[in-house]
Length: 238
Image (tube, rainbow, N blue to C red; front, side, top):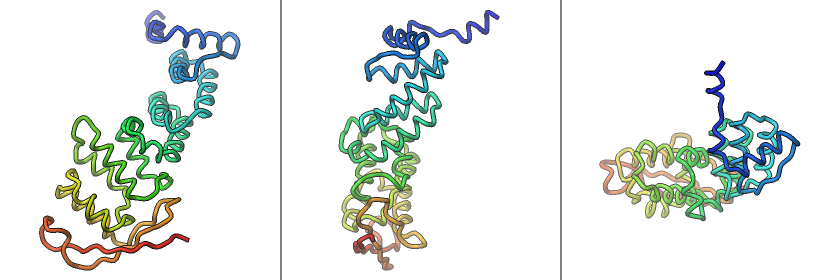
């Protein structure tokens, strides 16, 4: 009826003319031409117009063009349109190209909290070492317009393998970072460094790992009571 038609109506004035023309050409001829920058808009149009064949064609084209510059935005778009195939491809590209993403301010700050949590928790994250993982998180957190809630900060940091870092880096950079100088922040760090079962394995592709030796003593001068002294040495992976 009329109500059903109104519910499924698509507002064409919200669609760029070139995008609508490309979608229309595809529906009539099975092909269309459009500049690469407009492919995400064409994907949205295909979803709104419910043209599955066009959607599949655009997803294939976007997957072929995935790179460090497009991975995060296409990941967000794919999530919003519930396209798991494109989401998975974008995540894999972001993991593979994270060294490039982390080195460019604008790219790194495009990441959402959920995206960054997913990336730093993945064993395939590509960076030189675990120190670089922390640096990327630190830069992203410090670059937010509003302070990150502590719960969100801790969820970002829990997957970080602090025990794979050099002792001097932990002492001189991690412990003194203001967002971590809270009771919960220091607890997270201590638990990560002295977890039962020994240090975690380094991520895939990391060339060195750290073996921690724990001696009962004091962990800093501001954590209250006993703790641990940190010492470590590098071991080359086979």
